[in-house]
Amino acid sequence: MAGGSWFHAVIFGVFVCSGFCSLLYQVVWVRLAFSHFGVITPVFSCVLSVFMLGLGLGSLLGGSLARWCSGRLAVSPACLYGAVEGMIGLGAFVVPWLFQEGEDWLLNAGQATSSSSYLFASSVLIFVALLPWCTLMGATVPVMMAFIRQVEPRNSSSFSFLYLANVIGAMAGTILSALVLIELFGFRNTSMIAATINFLLAAVGMILAPCPSGRASGRVIACGGESMHCSRTRRCLSSGPSSAVAMKTESSITDRTKPAGTIRQPWWPLARE
Image 1 (tube, one colour):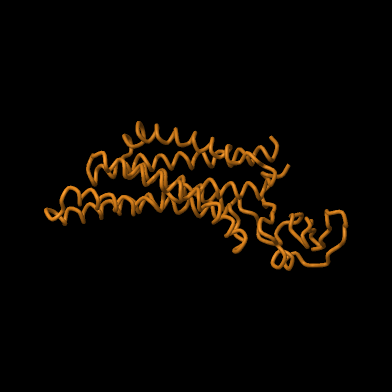
Image 2 (cartoon, rainbow, N blue to C red):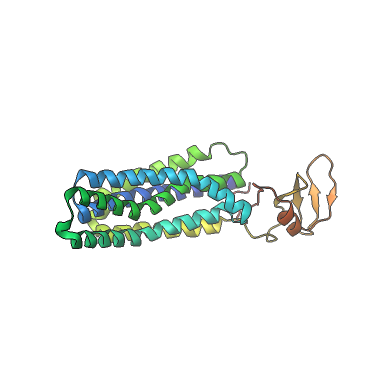
């Protein structure tokens, strides 16, 4: 199988797993919210609303965050993706704890809380407990799209590719969590399964990240506005029409003249033809 096909297969599998975890969390968190705040329509509506709000915010902010980290901090979007997946995995531990604390607080309020006040307080608690993790879930697609654009600048189908994988994983997560996993393992252990997958995806993101400056030869960098190819001798041979030799070190070029969106070739062989 060609290297590019392996790369696409890995990314596709990563996003199937990511979508699986996201919908698994949604099913578990809906049932946890029922168990802590009551099996009522407003609780269900609040969980779904916060989930969709978080996905929208993450989609809106993820791309800008990836560009900022890549341009200002020289952090690969793949590393950022790994960090996002790792933080999502932490939600498996934090959300049940926040729900339990919220339930205890509402119980202590007791008779002083009217039905409308109870519903409002429950909504606020659900909002605070779920929004950060749902926002991170929404950020996974634009962050990975930024990485694919670095590796394959001419790829114009990254969104549909990732969206398809995410939908397949989401369908599997909804069905398996509701019908199999929760029934066999309960809320806590099902959440731990999802968290384990998230942490594995975080490790994959770190592995996919481009190598540090100077580790691999033949990377494409920017020099004086033209595309340059750097060799181990740190000579930059212009691929533009002038073919002039720039006697600058790679570090000085990338640090001083690298524009936003400079492409660094990953150290791993999957994306190489």
